[in-house]
Image 1 (cartoon, rainbow, N blue to C red):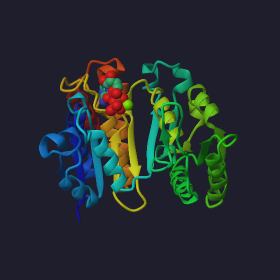
Image 2 (cartoon, rainbow, N blue to C red; image 1 turned 30 degrees about the vertical axis):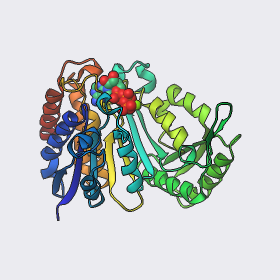
Image 3 (cartoon, rainbow, N blue to C red; image 1 turned 60 degrees about the horizontal axis):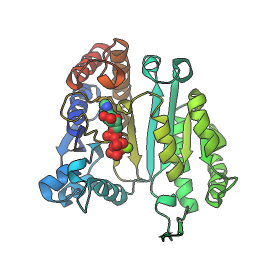
Image 4 (cartoon, protein in one colour; image 1 turned 90 degrees about the horizontal axis):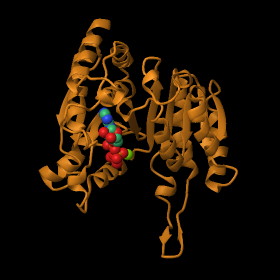
Length: 350
Ligand code: ATP
Ligand code: MG
């Protein structure tokens, strides 16, 4: 049976990079064991324009029935004054699908390294994954209060929530270099003390993997100083938010970074980590690699199409090695030129 992929192109550069990604997907589909059926639905600002809601009922229903979901990007100045903003639509989608694990790989190949603002000799070879807990912690904890003179939030974690995200991290590590770094602030925070103890417990189920702990302040420093030391970083919602944006500086552009969000049993959602980039939308300037690599992640993680996933990743790297790049990486290729080069490379090396 065909695997059903729901496509939410969204706003700004979303539709442009989605078109690129889908063209690459069609190009590698013959190399896949599955066939794919693509269905497009309005979402975000496009949802507001088409159906009066950032998450139209039909869109949500389709996502719930999907085998995987691809998202371009959402939001933009046009919808900032809406009561139900595009961003609220995304939060509602994540919540309904119970997406608790956000996975952000950051890889800086020797080809990409010289284009980064950081020293190439330090960052070349970086190949890490940040696993961020997405559904709990201080962003959701109650009670919370804000007055003119006092305010507080609650950083709450249930043990089972920590267990779930740690299992996700160890399973990812098993397919990689088998090193898990759990990041917390266990010298100060109660929630981090439970986090660390639970990480130790969960690690016993993965004797082939190594677990080490780091405080978040030190991890923030090492991520820039020695990024090649990391394999899988697992951390809570707040620390993961900050560290994953920090790590995105390593390749020098947001335009190459994919992500995945998983639930325990439903469909996963794959999207670039960047926003809708209204400043460059509609000009053919967007780097589609973030979307193309999100599709590679989908092929690997939702459909076990490792061969096709690697083919796409290698093709992107070799196109960059040829000196073909979009302007965010200092090149002159347009979105469609870069995409065409990746497709041609996929065909050459397959
Ligand atoms: P959001 O609030 O939705 O996260 P943001 O304010 O963080 O959005 P982005 O849309 O992520 O902003 O863009 C940040 C900067 O990075 C912009 O200058 C944008 O042009 C650039 N950028 C983002 N994505 C890409 C891409 N795929 N290709 C090229 N440049 C990009
Ligand atoms: Mg942002």
